[in-house]
Amino acid sequence: MNSRFFDMLRRALPVVPLALCVSGQAEAAPSPSLCAPDEQVAFSCPIARSHKIVSLCLAPGKATPPAARYVFGTPSHPELIYPAEGRARANFRTSRLSYAAGTGGNAYSFVKDNTKYILFNISGTGLENSGMIVKPVNKLDASAELDCKPSTAFDALNGRLLLDITRSWGPDPELDGNVLPQTKVPPKIK
Image 1 (cartoon, rainbow, N blue to C red):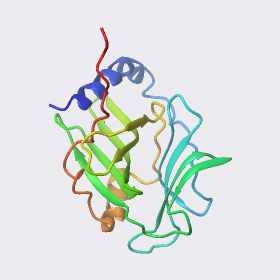
Image 2 (image 1 turned 60 degrees about the vertical axis):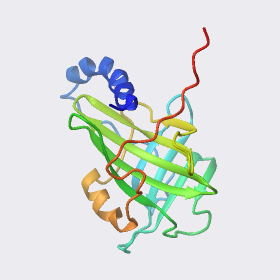
Image 3 (image 1 turned 60 degrees about the horizontal axis):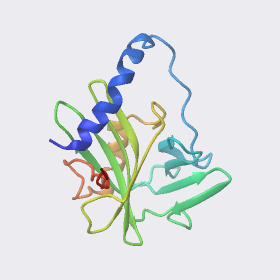
Image 4 (image 1 turned 120 degrees about the horizontal axis):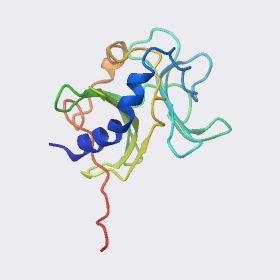
């Protein structure tokens, strides 16, 4: 069993009773995004313990495959925009993630300068986790994982519809039907 699944489950358990108490309340407003006003928000969330936002934006229109843009940073200072110029298809991939006990999700990935960027959304019974992973190409472990602030991940389209729209990007063979790469945790010093 993947230890990442248990880490997500451990993080989600304390919020389950609270979620049961507020389940009848109105839905929260959508997360902020770094998408342009004419773009469709495919995925966006503020990063936990940070003022930064990560967004995946689809170009307007019904082009197949849809042109997309990844933006990371703050509204006043985007740190990474991919592709850098215009709205190109680039090399985006879309994948279904598979975990035990009916837990799964979606991942959207691309490679830039020998680094893979993965946006993910995982859910299951009492479990919700979204964020971004940065991983060197040809390495097993991720170099960084940035989780979304709890309950803030937003996609304007439901996961199934978004997956159908982005299916023409093709799957990421490393991710499709699998679990996310783990961030290497340094050993504890005693």
